[in-house]
Image 1 (tube, one colour):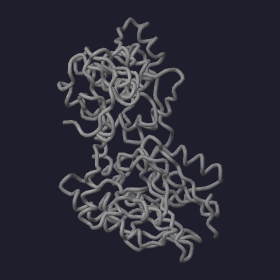
Image 2 (spheres, rainbow, N blue to C red):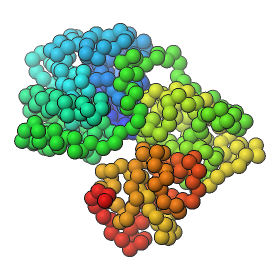
Image 3 (cartoon, rainbow, N blue to C red):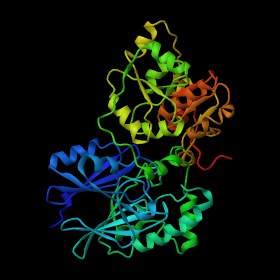
Image 4 (cartoon, rainbow, N blue to C red):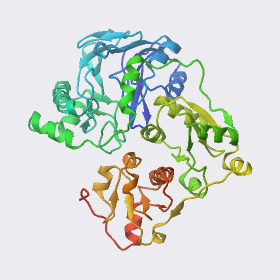
Length: 456
């Protein structure tokens, strides 16, 4: 078959910063690569083209999402293709370096490319002897390479050196070979900011700063120096993907709960997650609830801040999509979803329950409060309010005592800062406010200029 550009359908997860791929094989069958458990986008794309997924390939044991490969095996009868070294505990075709799979006109060749994970494969798509493109997963990505510390700091250097060799192997492919990575901008598996999610071998050789490193030692220093923190749930999902996700026979739902049921869940050790916008949470919320606004990044913060084994109830607005809450939770292995508060906060108050409010202030109303910046280290370094206390949101639950009394909590817009406020409230703090805006807004209102560099 001839391979046209429209045979490759990227499926982008903006929240996790990832791309999966659906490849139209031209005969009513398709190949899926690195697809997450939330198969809604893939199913819609396959249905539009009348495709059945014949193959589901995973480049590695993903740490940031549960793979949809097992589900595709159940739903479509797809053959799962994955590294033999991953020792997956479910039916699959185990592949080693150089193994090839005949897709019916096209060929998929496995290339061992350890580094991001030790069992990592890239998949080279061939039309005869012509290299069409390579699914690089977490090896070569746009202007970077994925992180190498997910197996622990003690193995980071070893895997970084393996990543160096993997990238050199990939760049031996022809310059015109398309590069189709999984991890992209916004991924905590490491990628620089930018709109481009695909590239070519030649473009990366010209512009990737890691490939410009003069030798292996310099490459190691550059890659390791650029690694920031990552969500706590990453430490669990690789093993969950090795075991394989449970097959879902129907779409999971979020049952309706009355206020008494929510109270009982809280009393029994459950947690309430408020997915409404930050302003709604600020105006009034269930005491002790955690604010995680429903947006693209919802799954990241759910998995970073909450235990996987606690039953969860959700507070939402009537116009919010509860299916999105469910699928973002299931995508990262959070399945103990007790339900949602029927009628929202109005029902909570009508039942005679109390609510708490949080000061949500524009920059001109914050006064001289201490300023706590809860953004990631790279964001803080790029520009922060002079004198700010920097505590990343992912670290805050363990460092609540370090937040100054009366502080204004701030991030880039207000969502993460409101989450921080809810964490402090759960820890017994009440004397704080949240900045409605960005560090730039605060600096302008207070006659300051943003500082750059690390905290002292």
